Image (cartoon, rainbow, N blue to C red):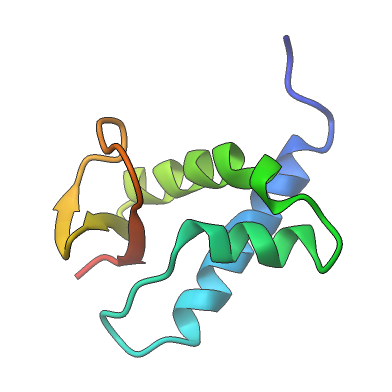
Length: 91
């Protein structure tokens, strides 16, 4: 199944949400990926449906060296991480 034509726009909106949320935090602080999903979905949107796209965008940001993913304060590999994760700017 091919991605929808809106996928690039959605990815840009997610990346912008991650960036904005991190900009609003203190240096070294983290965000939950669900915060980005909620921001993109809006007040009445189904943010849970956006969690897989958010993780994919976060993975791209990790690949570009812009952010890192943590669990329990330790950097983890997003591809193998299970359970809740946090995102922060790369140190």
